[in-house]
Length: 110
Image 1 (tube, rainbow, N blue to C red):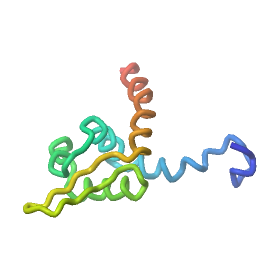
Image 2 (image 1 turned 45 degrees about the horizontal axis):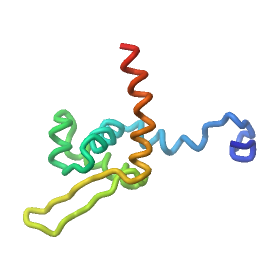
Image 3 (image 1 turned 60 degrees about the vertical axis):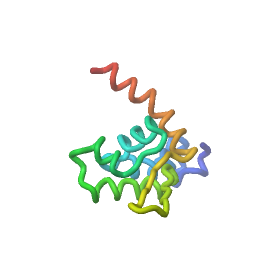
């Protein structure tokens, strides 16, 4: 990062992280990324099973956020009953890979 990349002129500025941290800091965002990564592809009902304390609207909003951030793809199939599946994009898989050391670090502190 160069000085011109940051509005403050400080090359240690973390301004580019702001949008990512905003999305990942929302409730259930990181656990949803981890669950989808672990399974490769999940239906909404399967996600609800993983997060029984989460409301349907919260999970739906989180998936929308992750999709808007380019981390999750949503595929809707024209079937009866309707079927929707979620999977990580390339960026989402890279994020999941980069979260692994953080998860290991946290686990080692317990």
